[in-house]
Length: 262
Image (cartoon, rainbow, N blue to C red):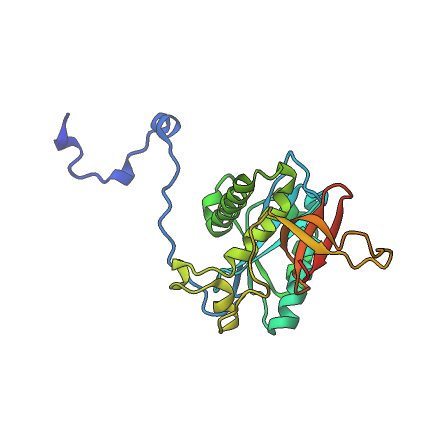
């Protein structure tokens, strides 16, 4: 109303407590262009759960670890959030042994499973810097949050396509991570995460199949007689991380099979 009164003033000189209380809003987030130069320089992590539906193997949470350089994702299914400490130690040892690399920074949210579980002492002993997002600010842990969404989008789509029960969500998420790690992405200039991590193209260890489809596992039991069925009718639920074979589930007996003869 009176511009002449404020011509010599700057905006920072004005302070109104009532306006701060009535009009305060959150700061906008600028897009980040940071990119790690070597594998495991920065690892993003997040915990998803709890799920109201327990998975086939009794899990209610899963923990994701994403390498910022290659965007390769590791998933660990857990029954309690307190297991985050043990699964990170397992991942850290695997990285040191298999890749000869060191984890420099772990970025996560401010969850108690990262802060109060003993991880702090473990980080200090190995010189790992633990970066956490501010309270109620998941945008600062955006890579892990978006990866969780990506995993669940793929897992739900696979389950809906075959009308799989909700209890299959754990195996669906693991299968989604397996496929995502091996599919090209625009983030990596049309390369697959595993390809970037290993420096060479890596094909599937076994030909990919449709999640939730009916499969027949060869019956290797020594108790099988000559007139007994030669195969067991199961459901294909994923790929074994340690064996060259398919993971199959037999609902009537609740037995699991890992076999190449499927």
